[in-house]
Amino acid sequence: MNPYIIAGTLGAIILSGIIGYWQGASICEGRHAKALAEAQQQAIAASNRAALRELDRLAAQAEADALAQQLEDQAYADSPDGCGLGADRVRRLNRL
Image (cartoon, rainbow, N blue to C red; front, top):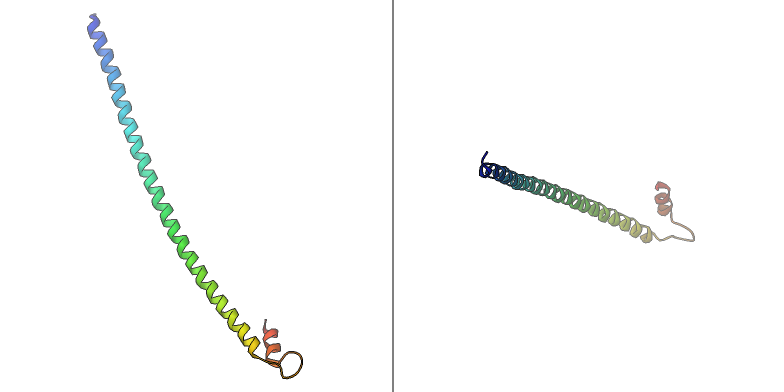
């Protein structure tokens, strides 16, 4: 056989391997980029859900604080007639 044919065939095989490797690498990079974009979208969605839950928690906490302040104000507004606690304070404490 002619050595030029062997060298050309070997070169074509090596070249096709290199091209296949490059194409495989670019396909892999594309898959990873797609997976990364999906993960980022999921993380953003989870972050938004957590922020909404935090807003709900803060609103509930503010409502609880306002109710506690209202109860405390009512308790201090009820002045005893003599010594000890007034009747309304005792009733309010018994409800707790």
